Amino acid sequence: MNYPDTPAHQLAARVQEKPDLLDQMPGDYAVLCSKSQNLQIFISFEPQAIFQEVSTIKQRLLAGKSLPLAGATVALGDNFCTAGLVTTCASRMLSSYEPPLTARAVDALRVQGSVIIGKANMEEFGLGSTGNSSHYGAAKNPWDPDRTAGCGAAAAAATLVSLALGTDSCGEARQAASYCGVLALKPSYGRISRRGVIEYAPSLTQPGLMARNTRDLVLALEATAGEDPGDPTSLKLLVPGYFSRVHEGRKGKGPLKVALLEDWDAVPTLETEVREAFQAQLDDLPKAGLEVEAVSLPSFQESSLAAAVISAVEAFSNLANYDGVRFGYRAEGPSLQEMYTATRTSGFSSKLKQFITFGALVSSEKYYTSYFVKSQKMRTRIARELESCLEEYDLVLTPTVPFTAPRLERPRVAWQLPDPAHFFTAAANLSGLPALTFPLLSPSGLPVGLQFIARFGDEAALLKAALLLEKKNPLQFPQPGFKDQGGCGR
View (cartoon, rainbow, N blue to C red):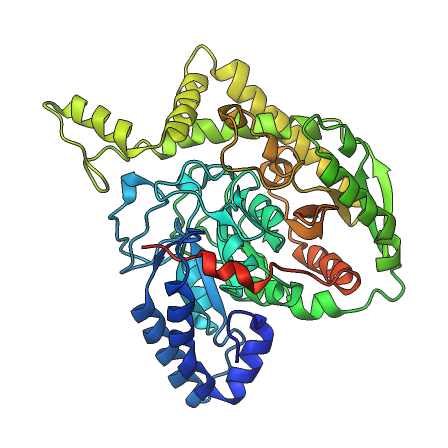
Protein backbone atom coordinates (compact mmCIF):
# COMPACT_ATOMS: atom_id res chain seq x y z
CA MET A 1 0.00 0.00 0.00
CA ASN A 2 1.21 3.53 -0.82
CA TYR A 3 0.51 5.28 2.49
CA PRO A 4 1.27 8.87 1.49
CA ASP A 5 -1.07 8.86 -1.52
CA THR A 6 -3.98 6.95 0.05
CA PRO A 7 -6.93 9.08 1.31
CA ALA A 8 -7.53 8.75 5.04
CA HIS A 9 -11.00 7.20 4.72
CA GLN A 10 -9.74 4.51 2.32
CA LEU A 11 -6.66 3.79 4.41
CA ALA A 12 -8.71 3.42 7.59
CA ALA A 13 -11.08 0.94 5.93
CA ARG A 14 -8.20 -1.24 4.73
CA VAL A 15 -6.25 -1.09 7.99
CA GLN A 16 -9.40 -1.88 10.00
CA GLU A 17 -9.68 -5.16 8.06
CA LYS A 18 -5.94 -5.91 7.98
CA PRO A 19 -4.05 -4.31 10.90
CA ASP A 20 -0.80 -5.90 9.71
CA LEU A 21 -0.73 -3.35 6.89
CA LEU A 22 0.43 -0.84 9.49
CA ASP A 23 3.77 -2.63 9.88
CA GLN A 24 5.25 -1.01 6.77
CA MET A 25 4.22 2.56 7.67
CA PRO A 26 7.19 3.64 9.85
CA GLY A 27 9.68 2.41 7.27
CA ASP A 28 7.84 4.04 4.38
CA TYR A 29 7.83 7.43 6.09
CA ALA A 30 11.43 7.17 7.26
CA VAL A 31 12.56 6.55 3.67
CA LEU A 32 10.32 9.28 2.26
CA CYS A 33 11.47 11.90 4.72
CA SER A 34 15.14 10.93 4.51
CA LYS A 35 14.97 12.09 0.89
CA SER A 36 13.26 15.32 1.80
CA GLN A 37 15.25 18.22 3.12
CA ASN A 38 14.91 21.10 0.65
CA LEU A 39 11.22 21.94 0.83
CA GLN A 40 11.50 22.40 4.62
CA ILE A 41 7.88 21.37 5.18
CA PHE A 42 8.58 19.88 8.62
CA ILE A 43 10.38 21.43 11.57
CA SER A 44 10.60 18.10 13.39
CA PHE A 45 10.06 14.51 12.37
CA GLU A 46 10.23 11.68 14.91
CA PRO A 47 10.47 8.16 13.38
CA GLN A 48 10.56 6.52 16.81
CA ALA A 49 7.37 8.32 17.87
CA ILE A 50 5.68 7.16 14.64
CA PHE A 51 6.69 3.58 15.38
CA GLN A 52 5.25 3.78 18.91
CA GLU A 53 1.97 5.32 17.73
CA VAL A 54 1.55 2.72 14.98
CA SER A 55 2.17 -0.09 17.48
CA THR A 56 -0.49 1.30 19.81
CA ILE A 57 -3.03 1.62 16.99
CA LYS A 58 -2.38 -1.93 15.82
CA GLN A 59 -2.94 -3.29 19.34
CA ARG A 60 -6.24 -1.40 19.60
CA LEU A 61 -7.40 -2.75 16.24
CA LEU A 62 -6.47 -6.32 17.18
CA ALA A 63 -8.47 -5.84 20.39
CA GLY A 64 -11.55 -5.15 18.26
CA LYS A 65 -11.69 -1.34 18.45
CA SER A 66 -13.31 0.55 15.59
CA LEU A 67 -11.11 3.53 14.59
CA PRO A 68 -12.51 5.82 11.86
CA LEU A 69 -9.06 7.34 11.24
CA ALA A 70 -6.97 4.20 11.72
CA GLY A 71 -3.54 4.84 10.22
CA ALA A 72 -4.42 8.29 8.89
CA THR A 73 -1.31 10.46 8.93
CA VAL A 74 -1.34 14.01 10.29
CA ALA A 75 1.02 16.99 10.17
CA LEU A 76 0.66 19.46 13.06
CA GLY A 77 1.47 23.12 12.86
CA ASP A 78 4.28 23.61 15.36
CA ASN A 79 2.09 25.71 17.65
CA PHE A 80 -0.02 22.68 18.66
CA CYS A 81 1.45 21.45 21.94
CA THR A 82 2.69 17.85 22.06
CA ALA A 83 3.88 16.52 25.41
CA GLY A 84 7.36 15.07 25.11
CA LEU A 85 8.03 16.70 21.72
CA VAL A 86 9.51 20.15 21.22
CA THR A 87 6.92 22.77 20.19
CA THR A 88 8.73 25.78 18.71
CA CYS A 89 6.05 27.95 17.05
CA ALA A 90 8.79 28.33 14.37
CA SER A 91 10.47 30.83 16.71
CA ARG A 92 13.88 31.02 18.29
CA MET A 93 12.02 32.04 21.44
CA LEU A 94 10.63 28.50 21.87
CA SER A 95 13.31 26.52 20.04
CA SER A 96 13.80 24.15 23.00
CA TYR A 97 10.35 24.27 24.62
CA GLU A 98 8.76 20.94 25.57
CA PRO A 99 5.16 21.54 26.71
CA PRO A 100 3.70 19.61 29.65
CA LEU A 101 0.46 18.78 27.79
CA THR A 102 -0.85 17.81 24.38
CA ALA A 103 -3.43 19.93 22.56
CA ARG A 104 -6.94 18.59 22.94
CA ALA A 105 -7.46 18.49 19.14
CA VAL A 106 -4.34 16.32 18.77
CA ASP A 107 -5.51 13.92 21.47
CA ALA A 108 -8.90 13.70 19.75
CA LEU A 109 -7.29 12.67 16.47
CA ARG A 110 -5.15 10.06 18.20
CA VAL A 111 -8.20 8.58 19.91
CA GLN A 112 -9.68 7.97 16.47
CA GLY A 113 -6.52 6.17 15.30
CA SER A 114 -4.51 8.83 13.47
CA VAL A 115 -0.71 8.97 13.47
CA ILE A 116 1.19 12.22 14.08
CA ILE A 117 3.99 12.29 11.49
CA GLY A 118 5.69 15.52 12.54
CA LYS A 119 5.47 19.23 13.34
CA ALA A 120 4.98 21.37 10.24
CA ASN A 121 6.91 24.52 9.45
CA MET A 122 4.90 27.73 9.73
CA GLU A 123 5.03 31.47 10.19
CA GLU A 124 6.44 32.47 13.57
CA PHE A 125 3.58 32.07 16.09
CA GLY A 126 1.20 31.58 13.12
CA LEU A 127 1.29 35.24 12.10
CA GLY A 128 0.51 35.54 8.37
CA SER A 129 1.35 33.32 5.41
CA THR A 130 4.27 35.04 3.67
CA GLY A 131 6.80 32.33 4.53
CA ASN A 132 9.39 34.87 5.63
CA SER A 133 9.43 34.67 9.43
CA SER A 134 10.11 31.03 10.41
CA HIS A 135 13.30 30.58 12.43
CA TYR A 136 13.85 27.37 10.45
CA GLY A 137 13.56 28.87 6.96
CA ALA A 138 10.50 29.13 4.77
CA ALA A 139 8.44 26.08 3.85
CA LYS A 140 8.45 25.78 0.05
CA ASN A 141 5.45 25.10 -2.13
CA PRO A 142 5.25 21.63 -3.76
CA TRP A 143 3.83 23.24 -6.92
CA ASP A 144 6.74 25.68 -7.21
CA PRO A 145 9.60 25.64 -4.65
CA ASP A 146 10.24 29.34 -5.27
CA ARG A 147 6.85 30.17 -3.71
CA THR A 148 5.56 30.18 -0.15
CA ALA A 149 3.49 27.32 1.26
CA GLY A 150 2.07 28.53 4.57
CA CYS A 151 1.58 25.98 7.37
CA GLY A 152 0.68 22.29 7.05
CA ALA A 153 -1.02 22.55 3.68
CA ALA A 154 2.24 21.78 1.85
CA ALA A 155 2.52 18.42 3.64
CA ALA A 156 -0.99 17.49 2.51
CA ALA A 157 -0.51 18.76 -1.05
CA ALA A 158 2.79 16.91 -1.30
CA THR A 159 0.99 13.70 -0.26
CA LEU A 160 3.30 13.38 2.75
CA VAL A 161 0.23 13.17 5.02
CA SER A 162 -3.53 12.72 4.73
CA LEU A 163 -4.49 15.54 7.12
CA ALA A 164 -2.95 18.68 8.57
CA LEU A 165 -3.77 21.04 11.45
CA GLY A 166 -2.88 24.71 11.48
CA THR A 167 -4.19 27.76 13.28
CA ASP A 168 -6.44 30.27 11.52
CA SER A 169 -6.48 33.75 13.09
CA CYS A 170 -7.01 35.98 10.05
CA GLY A 171 -7.31 33.21 7.48
CA GLU A 172 -3.80 31.70 7.60
CA ALA A 173 -4.87 28.04 7.28
CA ARG A 174 -7.20 28.85 4.39
CA GLN A 175 -4.55 30.96 2.70
CA ALA A 176 -1.98 28.16 2.97
CA ALA A 177 -4.50 25.72 1.49
CA SER A 178 -5.23 28.12 -1.37
CA TYR A 179 -1.51 28.42 -2.12
CA CYS A 180 -1.04 24.63 -2.08
CA GLY A 181 -4.26 23.42 -3.71
CA VAL A 182 -5.96 21.55 -0.85
CA LEU A 183 -9.17 22.02 1.15
CA ALA A 184 -9.16 23.82 4.50
CA LEU A 185 -11.93 24.36 7.03
CA LYS A 186 -12.02 26.99 9.77
CA PRO A 187 -14.90 25.85 12.01
CA SER A 188 -17.19 28.13 14.00
CA TYR A 189 -15.41 29.80 16.92
CA GLY A 190 -15.35 27.29 19.77
CA ARG A 191 -16.30 24.25 17.68
CA ILE A 192 -12.79 22.79 18.15
CA SER A 193 -11.03 23.28 21.47
CA ARG A 194 -8.12 25.71 21.59
CA ARG A 195 -6.64 24.10 24.70
CA GLY A 196 -2.98 23.40 24.08
CA VAL A 197 -2.75 25.72 21.07
CA ILE A 198 -0.21 28.57 21.29
CA GLU A 199 -1.84 31.56 19.62
CA TYR A 200 -1.23 35.25 19.15
CA ALA A 201 -4.86 36.48 18.87
CA PRO A 202 -7.18 34.40 21.09
CA SER A 203 -10.47 36.06 20.12
CA LEU A 204 -9.84 35.34 16.42
CA THR A 205 -8.03 32.00 16.41
CA GLN A 206 -9.48 28.59 15.64
CA PRO A 207 -7.71 25.33 14.77
CA GLY A 208 -8.02 24.80 11.03
CA LEU A 209 -8.28 21.40 9.30
CA MET A 210 -6.68 20.64 5.92
CA ALA A 211 -7.11 17.63 3.63
CA ARG A 212 -6.96 16.57 -0.02
CA ASN A 213 -10.62 15.56 -0.20
CA THR A 214 -13.92 16.44 1.45
CA ARG A 215 -14.59 13.07 3.04
CA ASP A 216 -11.28 13.17 4.96
CA LEU A 217 -12.14 16.68 6.11
CA VAL A 218 -15.50 15.42 7.42
CA LEU A 219 -13.80 12.63 9.40
CA ALA A 220 -11.27 15.07 10.88
CA LEU A 221 -14.02 17.47 11.96
CA GLU A 222 -16.09 14.66 13.52
CA ALA A 223 -13.00 13.59 15.47
CA THR A 224 -12.01 17.03 16.79
CA ALA A 225 -15.30 18.91 17.28
CA GLY A 226 -16.97 19.04 20.67
CA GLU A 227 -17.13 20.69 24.06
CA ASP A 228 -13.96 20.72 26.16
CA PRO A 229 -14.24 21.52 29.89
CA GLY A 230 -10.62 22.69 29.73
CA ASP A 231 -11.47 25.43 27.23
CA PRO A 232 -14.13 27.88 28.45
CA THR A 233 -14.61 29.21 24.91
CA SER A 234 -15.53 25.80 23.46
CA LEU A 235 -19.11 25.43 22.26
CA LYS A 236 -21.62 23.61 24.42
CA LEU A 237 -23.76 22.91 21.36
CA LEU A 238 -24.39 19.31 20.34
CA VAL A 239 -22.05 18.24 17.55
CA PRO A 240 -24.12 17.02 14.59
CA GLY A 241 -23.34 13.86 12.66
CA TYR A 242 -21.43 15.58 9.89
CA PHE A 243 -21.12 12.56 7.63
CA SER A 244 -24.89 11.97 7.50
CA ARG A 245 -25.63 15.72 7.24
CA VAL A 246 -23.23 16.18 4.34
CA HIS A 247 -24.53 13.21 2.39
CA GLU A 248 -28.24 13.72 3.00
CA GLY A 249 -30.21 14.96 0.00
CA ARG A 250 -31.95 18.32 -0.35
CA LYS A 251 -35.27 16.93 -1.51
CA GLY A 252 -37.85 19.70 -1.27
CA LYS A 253 -35.21 22.29 -0.33
CA GLY A 254 -33.90 23.13 -3.79
CA PRO A 255 -30.27 24.01 -4.55
CA LEU A 256 -27.94 25.65 -2.05
CA LYS A 257 -28.44 29.42 -2.20
CA VAL A 258 -25.13 31.25 -2.46
CA ALA A 259 -24.54 34.99 -1.98
CA LEU A 260 -21.65 36.24 -4.11
CA LEU A 261 -19.79 39.31 -2.82
CA GLU A 262 -20.77 41.69 -5.62
CA ASP A 263 -17.53 43.68 -5.80
CA TRP A 264 -15.18 40.70 -5.43
CA ASP A 265 -13.33 41.66 -8.61
CA ALA A 266 -12.66 45.26 -7.51
CA VAL A 267 -9.90 44.35 -5.05
CA PRO A 268 -6.70 46.23 -6.03
CA THR A 269 -4.44 43.22 -5.36
CA LEU A 270 -6.57 40.75 -7.34
CA GLU A 271 -4.39 38.92 -9.87
CA THR A 272 -5.64 38.07 -13.35
CA GLU A 273 -4.91 34.37 -12.62
CA VAL A 274 -7.30 34.37 -9.67
CA ARG A 275 -9.94 36.42 -11.47
CA GLU A 276 -10.05 34.04 -14.45
CA ALA A 277 -10.09 30.84 -12.35
CA PHE A 278 -12.79 32.17 -10.02
CA GLN A 279 -14.96 33.46 -12.87
CA ALA A 280 -14.72 30.13 -14.68
CA GLN A 281 -15.87 28.33 -11.53
CA LEU A 282 -18.72 30.83 -11.04
CA ASP A 283 -20.06 29.91 -14.46
CA ASP A 284 -20.05 26.21 -13.51
CA LEU A 285 -21.62 26.48 -10.04
CA PRO A 286 -25.23 26.05 -11.24
CA LYS A 287 -24.23 22.72 -12.82
CA ALA A 288 -22.97 21.57 -9.42
CA GLY A 289 -26.29 22.43 -7.75
CA LEU A 290 -25.58 25.89 -6.35
CA GLU A 291 -27.73 28.93 -7.07
CA VAL A 292 -25.67 32.16 -7.04
CA GLU A 293 -26.83 35.76 -6.58
CA ALA A 294 -24.70 38.88 -6.12
CA VAL A 295 -25.18 40.76 -2.84
CA SER A 296 -23.75 43.88 -1.24
CA LEU A 297 -21.81 43.66 2.03
CA PRO A 298 -20.66 47.27 2.51
CA SER A 299 -18.38 46.70 5.51
CA PHE A 300 -16.71 43.51 4.26
CA GLN A 301 -13.81 45.43 2.70
CA GLU A 302 -12.88 46.80 6.14
CA SER A 303 -12.43 43.36 7.70
CA SER A 304 -8.69 42.98 7.05
CA LEU A 305 -7.92 46.36 8.62
CA ALA A 306 -10.12 45.73 11.67
CA ALA A 307 -8.55 42.29 12.13
CA ALA A 308 -5.03 43.73 11.83
CA VAL A 309 -5.65 46.21 14.65
CA ILE A 310 -7.43 43.74 16.95
CA SER A 311 -4.92 40.93 16.41
CA ALA A 312 -1.95 43.29 16.95
CA VAL A 313 -3.34 44.47 20.29
CA GLU A 314 -4.01 40.89 21.37
CA ALA A 315 -0.51 39.81 20.25
CA PHE A 316 1.09 42.64 22.24
CA SER A 317 -0.65 41.31 25.35
CA ASN A 318 -0.52 37.59 24.62
CA LEU A 319 3.19 37.41 23.75
CA ALA A 320 4.31 39.60 26.66
CA ASN A 321 5.20 36.56 28.81
CA TYR A 322 8.03 35.54 26.45
CA ASP A 323 10.66 37.44 28.40
CA GLY A 324 13.40 34.91 29.13
CA VAL A 325 12.37 34.41 32.76
CA ARG A 326 9.76 31.66 32.91
CA PHE A 327 10.48 29.49 29.86
CA GLY A 328 11.90 29.59 26.37
CA TYR A 329 14.98 31.29 24.97
CA ARG A 330 16.99 33.61 27.23
CA ALA A 331 19.72 36.04 26.24
CA GLU A 332 22.27 37.31 28.74
CA GLY A 333 22.28 40.91 30.00
CA PRO A 334 23.97 42.85 32.79
CA SER A 335 20.61 43.78 34.33
CA LEU A 336 17.08 42.38 34.39
CA GLN A 337 15.75 45.05 32.03
CA GLU A 338 18.62 44.55 29.59
CA MET A 339 18.08 40.79 29.71
CA TYR A 340 14.41 41.32 28.80
CA THR A 341 15.38 43.58 25.92
CA ALA A 342 18.11 41.26 24.61
CA THR A 343 15.86 38.20 24.85
CA ARG A 344 12.96 39.71 22.92
CA THR A 345 15.27 41.42 20.42
CA SER A 346 17.06 38.24 19.43
CA GLY A 347 14.25 35.77 20.21
CA PHE A 348 11.60 37.23 17.88
CA SER A 349 11.83 37.84 14.14
CA SER A 350 11.83 41.35 12.72
CA LYS A 351 8.32 40.82 11.37
CA LEU A 352 6.87 39.79 14.72
CA LYS A 353 8.62 42.64 16.54
CA GLN A 354 7.10 45.14 14.11
CA PHE A 355 3.66 43.63 14.67
CA ILE A 356 4.00 43.70 18.48
CA THR A 357 5.21 47.30 18.32
CA PHE A 358 2.16 48.25 16.26
CA GLY A 359 -0.02 46.52 18.87
CA ALA A 360 1.68 48.47 21.66
CA LEU A 361 1.10 51.71 19.78
CA VAL A 362 -2.63 51.22 19.20
CA SER A 363 -3.02 49.99 22.80
CA SER A 364 -1.74 53.30 24.12
CA GLU A 365 -4.09 55.87 25.59
CA LYS A 366 -3.52 58.18 22.63
CA TYR A 367 -4.73 55.72 19.99
CA TYR A 368 -6.86 53.15 21.86
CA THR A 369 -10.23 54.80 21.22
CA SER A 370 -9.55 55.97 17.68
CA TYR A 371 -8.13 52.62 16.49
CA PHE A 372 -8.91 49.66 18.74
CA VAL A 373 -12.41 50.66 19.85
CA LYS A 374 -13.38 51.63 16.30
CA SER A 375 -12.05 48.29 15.02
CA GLN A 376 -14.17 46.42 17.56
CA LYS A 377 -17.24 48.38 16.45
CA MET A 378 -16.43 47.56 12.84
CA ARG A 379 -16.09 43.90 13.87
CA THR A 380 -19.65 43.96 15.20
CA ARG A 381 -20.93 45.62 12.02
CA ILE A 382 -19.22 43.07 9.76
CA ALA A 383 -20.61 40.18 11.81
CA ARG A 384 -24.15 41.58 11.67
CA GLU A 385 -23.98 42.10 7.90
CA LEU A 386 -22.85 38.51 7.34
CA GLU A 387 -25.41 37.09 9.75
CA SER A 388 -28.19 39.10 8.09
CA CYS A 389 -27.12 37.89 4.65
CA LEU A 390 -27.02 34.28 5.85
CA GLU A 391 -30.61 34.49 7.07
CA GLU A 392 -31.60 34.48 3.38
CA TYR A 393 -28.72 32.51 1.85
CA ASP A 394 -26.99 29.27 2.79
CA LEU A 395 -23.48 30.47 1.96
CA VAL A 396 -21.43 33.56 1.12
CA LEU A 397 -18.93 33.16 -1.71
CA THR A 398 -15.62 34.96 -2.38
CA PRO A 399 -12.15 34.10 -3.65
CA THR A 400 -9.90 32.90 -0.80
CA VAL A 401 -6.81 35.00 -1.52
CA PRO A 402 -6.51 37.72 -4.20
CA PHE A 403 -3.31 36.19 -5.58
CA THR A 404 -1.43 32.93 -6.13
CA ALA A 405 1.27 31.81 -3.69
CA PRO A 406 3.75 34.70 -3.37
CA ARG A 407 7.37 34.21 -4.29
CA LEU A 408 9.63 33.77 -1.28
CA GLU A 409 11.99 36.56 -2.35
CA ARG A 410 9.33 39.23 -2.62
CA PRO A 411 9.69 42.87 -1.51
CA ARG A 412 9.38 43.76 2.15
CA VAL A 413 6.34 45.93 1.37
CA ALA A 414 4.38 42.66 1.34
CA TRP A 415 4.43 42.81 5.17
CA GLN A 416 2.24 45.89 5.19
CA LEU A 417 -0.76 46.15 7.49
CA PRO A 418 -3.37 45.12 6.75
CA ASP A 419 -1.94 42.04 5.03
CA PRO A 420 -3.47 41.90 1.52
CA ALA A 421 -3.80 38.10 1.88
CA HIS A 422 -6.40 38.68 4.63
CA PHE A 423 -8.80 40.70 2.46
CA PHE A 424 -11.36 37.91 1.92
CA THR A 425 -10.55 35.64 4.88
CA ALA A 426 -10.49 37.91 7.96
CA ALA A 427 -14.27 38.50 8.05
CA ALA A 428 -14.94 34.90 9.09
CA ASN A 429 -12.53 35.25 12.02
CA LEU A 430 -14.01 38.56 13.14
CA SER A 431 -17.54 37.12 13.07
CA GLY A 432 -16.65 33.66 14.38
CA LEU A 433 -18.42 32.07 11.39
CA PRO A 434 -17.20 28.85 9.75
CA ALA A 435 -15.43 29.12 6.39
CA LEU A 436 -13.96 26.69 3.88
CA THR A 437 -11.59 27.06 0.95
CA PHE A 438 -11.90 24.80 -2.09
CA PRO A 439 -8.95 24.45 -4.50
CA LEU A 440 -9.03 25.55 -8.14
CA LEU A 441 -6.32 25.67 -10.78
CA SER A 442 -5.41 28.95 -12.48
CA PRO A 443 -4.78 29.11 -16.26
CA SER A 444 -1.03 28.76 -15.62
CA GLY A 445 -1.55 25.63 -13.49
CA LEU A 446 -0.98 27.21 -10.06
CA PRO A 447 -3.55 26.56 -7.31
CA VAL A 448 -5.95 29.26 -6.11
CA GLY A 449 -8.93 29.08 -3.78
CA LEU A 450 -12.69 29.61 -3.68
CA GLN A 451 -14.10 30.45 -0.22
CA PHE A 452 -17.50 29.73 1.32
CA ILE A 453 -18.73 31.25 4.61
CA ALA A 454 -21.72 29.70 6.41
CA ARG A 455 -24.02 30.35 9.36
CA PHE A 456 -22.61 29.86 12.84
CA GLY A 457 -22.46 26.15 13.62
CA ASP A 458 -23.32 25.07 10.07
CA GLU A 459 -20.06 23.50 8.93
CA ALA A 460 -22.18 20.83 7.22
CA ALA A 461 -23.33 23.35 4.57
CA LEU A 462 -19.70 24.14 3.75
CA LEU A 463 -18.78 20.48 3.47
CA LYS A 464 -21.85 19.73 1.36
CA ALA A 465 -20.91 22.51 -1.08
CA ALA A 466 -17.32 21.23 -1.22
CA LEU A 467 -18.53 17.71 -1.96
CA LEU A 468 -20.72 18.99 -4.81
CA LEU A 469 -17.77 20.86 -6.31
CA GLU A 470 -15.42 17.93 -5.83
CA LYS A 471 -17.71 15.70 -7.89
CA LYS A 472 -17.51 18.22 -10.75
CA ASN A 473 -13.84 19.15 -10.23
CA PRO A 474 -11.59 16.15 -9.45
CA LEU A 475 -8.74 17.51 -7.35
CA GLN A 476 -5.18 17.49 -8.71
CA PHE A 477 -1.85 17.41 -6.90
CA PRO A 478 1.83 17.85 -7.84
CA GLN A 479 3.55 14.97 -9.59
CA PRO A 480 5.66 12.65 -7.39
CA GLY A 481 8.96 13.92 -8.80
CA PHE A 482 8.95 16.83 -6.36
CA LYS A 483 9.52 14.49 -3.43
CA ASP A 484 13.23 14.30 -4.16
CA GLN A 485 13.37 17.97 -3.15
CA GLY A 486 12.37 17.51 0.44
CA GLY A 487 9.92 17.89 3.26
CA CYS A 488 11.26 16.96 6.71
CA GLY A 489 13.14 19.04 9.21
CA ARG A 490 15.53 18.46 12.03
